[in-house]
Length: 257
Image (cartoon, rainbow, N blue to C red):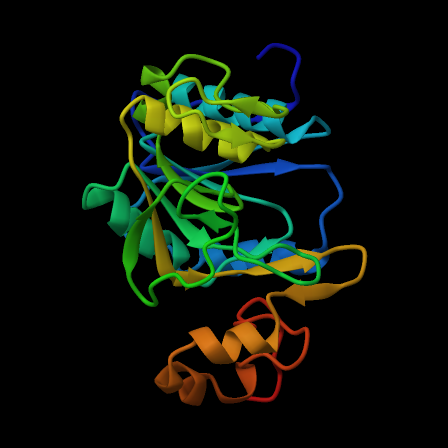
């Protein structure tokens, strides 16, 4: 997409196992920067990877540009992460494992950054959030947000552009189901499914979503207590969330030890 401000180092043919794609407004919280640095320290061994980002453009345009860069530089898998999403340290390893085992698209779980919060995964499009999802496993869904999502790049080569686009209410001619306004993420999920690809969610990947205006993390303590396995709560000790603190404080400096 000519004229967009994006960065990606020149590479040889099919050099990168995956890329971390970040659509951003250009203003990033320092905690997110530290989080991404720490995430890079625990990536799987033997993996070649790069960051690719697009800033200052609508998110659908930014995602299109990031995908184009990945295709151009022959990246195998693309990991979308939003600049207000804090993923667990095992997220990349877990989602890469999912796609290597056959998932076309594998998403973690990110919550909306408002009250009442809800998970951005959808068992069926048009029926609202999937609250009662299976715990600590991989399951099929129809759609998910792109804030923490691993995608096989070859998928985009088999789907007509645009891959991401904001749309307004419309009726699916095949099913007769009516959709209200859809974000660029649900638009892509629909096109991917129409092309025969399946979407899966891995509920072992639980993310924090930062409201940059209020400084509050979502989903909050109620969901943490419900979803985090007891043995992990005990292991994490003081690192388990309190109030609006994040699920796993792996990104925050801790001088107590």
